[in-house]
Length: 55
Image 1 (cartoon, rainbow, N blue to C red):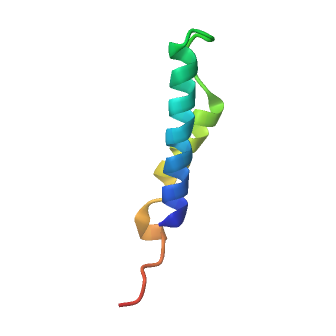
Image 2: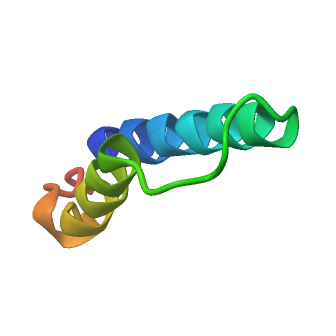
């Protein structure tokens, strides 16, 4: 679960930083390889791949 949390947090930080940069007018919005990779990583690591804690 920690891997998923870290990848989603990294994606959120990237989206916020890119959005702020675009809103402040320093760049036009465009596709980003890093953003696509982080989104794909967070989707390909479903919770069922992580071993659950023993009860």
